[in-house]
Length: 161
Image 1 (cartoon, rainbow, N blue to C red):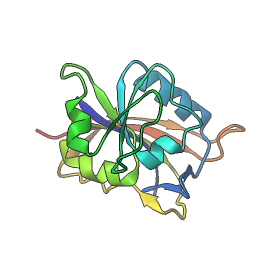
Image 2: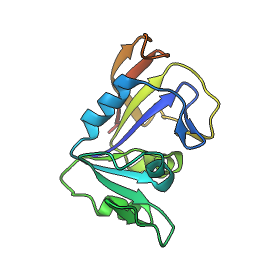
Image 3: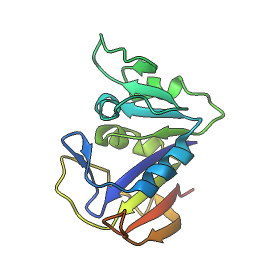
Image 4: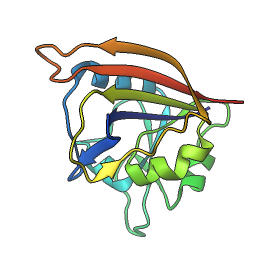
């Protein structure tokens, strides 16, 4: 299965200046649990936003730069090649950024969204989720607290047949 996983604001904002717009420790923990042991596909800017490669995951980075070879990563020049290097019988996760989400939306089987209940000014956005194509199959609301400045909901969407 191809799964897009993202934390997305009410206005579909993802980030600004190659950084997240919020800090949600439980979302980070959930992301780690879900993606651990899997192949993760991302654009170069998303990869460069990490201090180092994420442990226990195979990183596939999409970049048009011919001399780009970050240690511990598989680098390919497009989304099709990124998917092709992944095992066919395992879930793979597309983790951003905005351009990669837009390119892969039509290929995805599932969307794993953390909906942050706030709108933000951003320079990167998640594509619209079309209710004609996607069915919301589960959601879990989480209220803000001392470690989470915003209410947020874990949402799972499945492509309609």
